[in-house]
Length: 328
Length: 256
Image 1 (tube, rainbow over the protein chains, first blue to last red):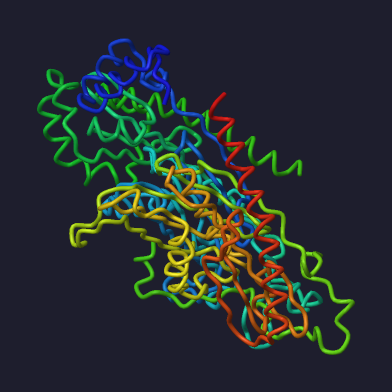
Image 2 (image 1 turned 120 degrees about the horizontal axis):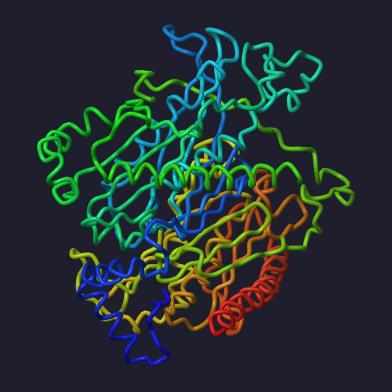
């Protein structure tokens, strides 16, 4: 972790490190005054992001996403299930978010429970579950999506969502056919290649709208995009905005925190109170706010503007990763 | 989304897998080739990299063929409150698998014994007296299981320990050998492991030429054991060199 003002002298470096440990908030505030962060990023810039597709050969689709040093590995395995009576022509997606003990020295048992259902929810609009149908009423695909956090350094949700999206765009559905026992089996392996495969065309899943997210940390009137674990622990108010590829708001998640009192004190103190009380109930379920709707919270507009920029970046990175695969 | 289903649905993989053992080694086994085309006494190319997980004190990633493993080391840090006072340090090991590590989801055996075997293999190499009263945690995650998982985990863990700066007498290199009929194949892949008659795993400290763990399972004859042990020791020596190079590279890269 190179400090921007650390000279070669070891004694000052130790002092800076000690100051950072003892007064983390003051350490950060000194940086924020200069509009810079300790890792030399401007406030609104996300860390370097990379995607590698096809990291796990034993899965049908997989991707490794890295934002800074936060690393997530997502893999999809396709299995066959009997669809329920209510939805005979729909498949299913089961999402699990794991934080194995390798990823972080601090055991935070609350974290995975919080992130997993939220990740799961973003996918509800992304994939038409009818595409996962094989034989109406008899068989459908169950997509098991498992996301493993390999290295936790902030922005867990963003990285998890990115790896999941990338894994779905890498997913290739195997060619299957019906065997004599009425079971779905891989066409090539069972020597049934003469038989008509039942999913000849449906080898790729159409992603109707792809969600991308950006987490911001709010402190006083500063907005820090894509926080590291240190930043998340020092400044407690985080806001996660999820937009789809056409910049439509999918969700906005603000779990607690105190920032509203600072940023929107005069304008909307009444709304502020109202907002914090009902935020969970009204905003997290897919409230499809059009972005032309007037939003009265300045921090919210800023966060969404930052997210919009970030979505463009992420889209480009994902496209590059996909085209890189096609060249091979 | 899972709640929508009500009860958990019963799913199965369309990949049935080959359950029957192919008719190899019956009479003339000389023509037989290994699934990945290696010679019987040839290991898979090994790739190691330290510093895979930033938030850990030390970590390493290892890849041999399709076996992919990541190991993080935390500590030395405070032991659990319930632990008794101890003059020497403690070593805590855990090995887990991802759900997609095996060809069929969640079908990997529980591998409960791997954690204790990893502990036993490393224990002899670590200078536990250098960190009294504290614990070093070694956590391994098998990202993809492609055979010889435990030896890869052990080698990778010793690199992660070195990366974390834990004092050791030597690196620990581990190699396994499978006995298939009359033949010995080194560093078996998953398919070979599934129809082996016996297996041997040897972990050793190459520069000291000391064995930290030796396990046999299955059917073995005495000459086979001797041959297999010699094979393993040679392979460990070579693997140790690869691991050493990896550490040297990391050290010279950080100096620059």
